[in-house]
Image (tube, rainbow, N blue to C red; front, side, top):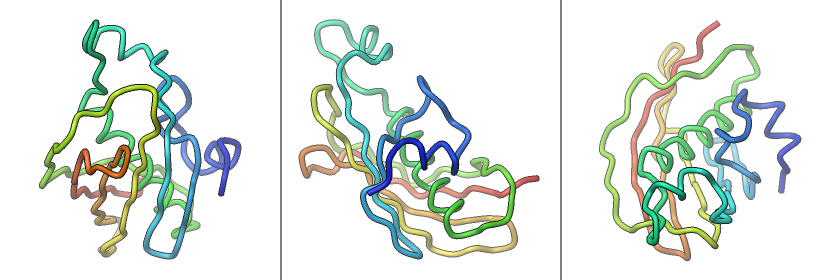
Length: 139
């Protein structure tokens, strides 16, 4: 299990826009990470007062950051990973504070500087998001 210090060496995002706390598992083509949602995050204050729900775009960002970690671990060349395509997104469950979310990403293939991924976000073992996405490594 890796901590935030290692994550800082692998991707450029920092709080409050870092949505990965730990790397739980990693293999050559798969990575699993988590983020504890305390309820103190700013986005819960306005989304929605009295019934906080993590915005879907931030669930996607958590998956994208997890993909960037896998890309960084599997490709030692320098560069920044940027999102070029998001597709097949399906939101299944609402994500609420007070419990962790887990992100799992699989590297499907690489073509040139494009990395193709699929991923899921779960909370309490329930799938909240399925997503396919592509990132490019740029200089």
